[in-house]
Amino acid sequence: MRCKWVNEKNNLYVKYHDKEWGIPSYDDTYLFEMLLLESFQAGLSWECILNKREYFKESFDNFDYKKISKYDDDKIEELLNNKNIIRNKLKINAAINNAKIFMNIQKEYKTFSNYIWHFTNNKVIKNKTNIFRTTSSLSDEISSDLKNRGMKFVGSTIIYSYLQAIGIIDDHELNCDNY
Image (cartoon, rainbow, N blue to C red; front, side):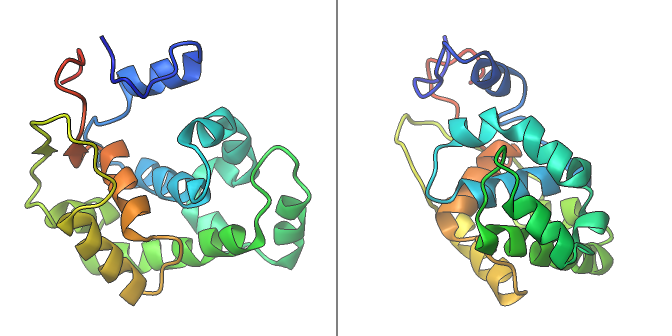
């Protein structure tokens, strides 16, 4: 059994749920990828973003935050004309801005992983109910901290989804095989 939200007809979604979602990650490249994708999800479904993930990967230099932090007006224009991704100028600019702040956090904490995991003392928070949440005190705290550092599109709901994606919050439903 899988979590009810999984579209069983979409192989990408099934694979994402089974092999990725809720599994703790400590890899900064992956952590940035998920942060970028979650920020583009704002106002859209995760399935929409997941279906465009490979296009995002190609368009955003394999989610290389060092390269993304240096994107110029020409690259922004290229992205705005790319029909395969979400062409939202605010989100594109946020990705560039957030890449810079991501690297600042790395300097401060040695890795972004150290930063994000320190909020739970490197512990996974396992949901023990089937209560659907979109925010928590943890996502509120991290969202506030990231906003204070200057990140954009990092509201509490986006951060809650992000924490689920990277395995800090394990929200698999009680009857899910991954629980």
